[in-house]
Length: 280
Image (tube, rainbow, N blue to C red; front, side, top):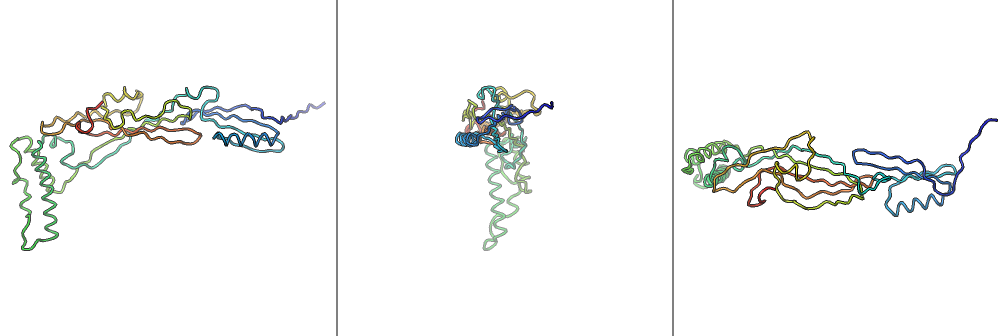
């Protein structure tokens, strides 16, 4: 006798072997059910739609299958699933006014010479305007008036010498300096049951490179290093400045599979203590 077999359908839903996986967005579960009742099949689809559960459904000849897609491991508590972390160091560069940029010459300046250099910039603009729009009688600022060697800088030797270097650059048309200002970004991918929401703690604060790793639990296996620029030692007439990371407000967005992402950004730069306080 030749053995035979047949599939016995059941009108109610019967759970089939499930599939569990993990990728760059975390864990997932596919829980399939099969049935022969079309009414039961439609009821399950309606319930899934009403509850916002992702699913895929298919009808066959006398059998129906619906698979529910969950954004976590269905066999564990989704609230205990750790987030998937992605760390990025994004290179950025900006042009900064040559008088405000941090370099050996600007560090030597006192406030008086900074004001004199800013006045020189204004004089250059006035001269350019007078050339393009000659005043009656030919009066107005002359090119000789912009000679850096004729400018009365302060009596502090280091500051005056640095100011003369910068004045020659400014008269030559150099207006800015390229500053490297990287952005550090952390992306947390979580399921919709993650119990810790994004907060605004420390938003708007400056965090030093020395305290950053411990404050935000930075992994020690990242393939980049933190910049450790020394704070400029400036004349007492000038504002106190600190290097550090400015913390931006969090970005929160929902992505596929009912997953969420919390994105934190920190921008590196030189910040005045009077505006942002002492770095954490």
